[in-house]
Image 1 (tube, one colour):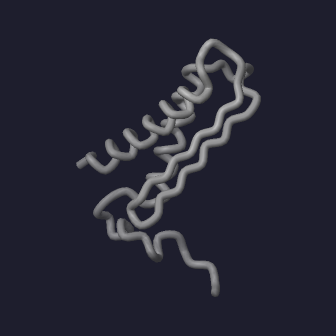
Image 2: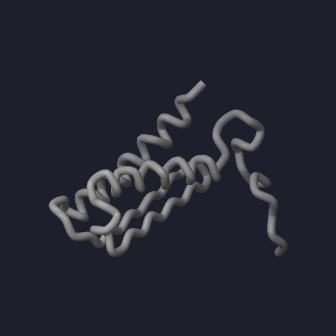
Length: 94
């Protein structure tokens, strides 16, 4: 099978909503903002934000290894929720 162009199977490619790439980018940026609002960049030794949007289903996984006052697991959960909220807002835009 050959590679397909972005948007070939994108149900939103006709302009009715955001593209899959835009959804993924929005979610990743929102999650990253939460992580670095709670931890200084120098406090974070590892962060992995994985976003998948396929067939209208958003999956966000956030892993953080960091020193600081905040609980990395709680921040990861909050970052994933923020990502989902940002995507919800993206779809609500006129």
